Length: 221
Image (tube, rainbow, N blue to C red; front, side):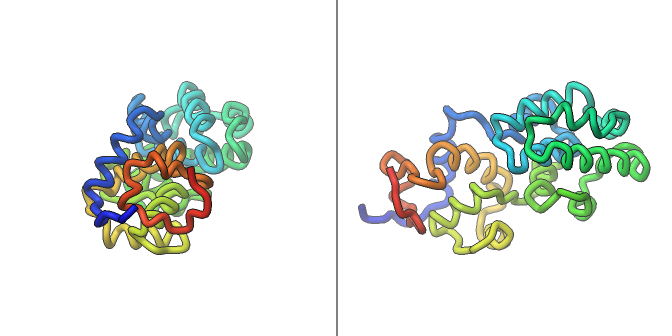
């Protein structure tokens, strides 16, 4: 098939339509359920690390049923938090991280998490992906959150050519229209889970295949 000229606006439009039947990315689903504060978004993202959305979403909801604010979280023992989030990977370590963040926010920030990227990145266990997701969803800041799906797919398209998610984030910030900075994660997470999968992507039925360079695709469906 002859490749069409790459059109990011058309790509985004087609991806949005393609993922409509699938569950939303966990962080955006949490926000739609009312858990859209910076603290809840940050905690939800910590719980999602190395954990499938199908697990991290209900785990987050269970935790927020017990504690939604830094004050409420700080009042829980680490063991209590770990028990609630036990289905999330590295539950004990994450419980300690969440408790420490909550205590610091109570002691130093009047129990509120500011929309401050440097502060978010200073917390143990919080990297650019989680910091940017929280800032983008809860604070409406124009940032790009690059997880493994965003990294893999934008490089597979040939839109960027980078080896790491961090480098992909920098490349997208220089190239991707700002209006898509938050949407790119919301759309490519379900797209990457159900269509443009890591192994044997569904290229034959993909609505953007005519513009995709299929970089690194060895076997496809």
